[in-house]
Amino acid sequence: MITLGAYLILSGIIFSIGIAGVIASRQVIKVLLSLELLLAASNLSFVAFSKFNGDYAGQLIVFFVILVAAAEVAVGLAIVVLMYRHLSTIQADELQTMRW
Amino acid sequence: MPSLFFGFFATILILASLGVILARNPLYNVLSLVVAIFSLSSLFVLLEAFFVGIILLLVYAGAVLVFFLFVVMCLGLKSVDTPSKEQNKLRSLGALAGFLFAGTFFLAVQSFIKAIGMGSSSIRGTIETIGKVLFTDYLLPFELTSFLLLIALFGIVSLSQGALNTGKASETS
Image 1 (tube, chains in turn cyan, brown):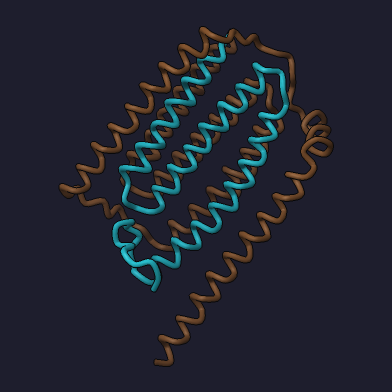
Image 2 (tube, rainbow over the protein chains, first blue to last red):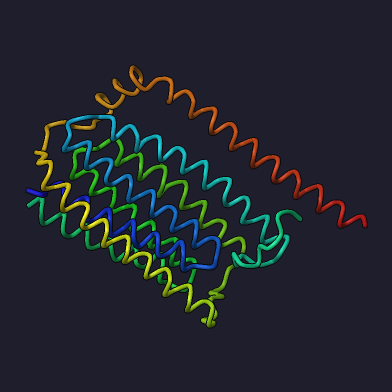
């Protein structure tokens, strides 16, 4: 039988991979993808706690997290497309002004 | 048998998420995130959270990541990661942060597992059970998410409107 600890450690590994990606990557698209990894890791631990705690709240929170992530990705990718049009690059360190 | 499946999908999940941050081509980043989401959904099914698993597949792999693919294809991104000195510094900083987090998390989980011994329960997250809880106890948050999506829609429309206006201004000037 798989224990709660195995799921939590797996989610921790995925979360740390996501953190490394957010810090190390310069392309904005890669940063957004790593943010998706962070959300996925937290979803995994929510579902694992829901199963081992006998409570449906964890799975409902995952449902809401998916909704929020969809909104975040829509706005984030719109900003990425705008950035590409204005600066014709998506390197994060080219964004040096607050407005254009 | 379940532990065999767990090991299989966990290995795929870790490898695919390493691919998300290590692959040079943005297309491969997005595609390995699709693989990661598929194996995450299989892990949800192992945890008997069927509804959330299929929603994850439909919404994430079906809509969000296809959207990512659209953007990557439309922008025609090549692998522009030139390994400069600054980039190497960022890479080592990122790896350091990841390892630090993994270490502290591992220690925390160990002490937590010793403190609380949770056994597996018999809940099954089917559409029926999830729907019952969603439309009774969590009705208000569920309705509020519609406002969130509406506000995101307004944000995107105003962003693209600004882009259209500036485009016209630069054409006329």
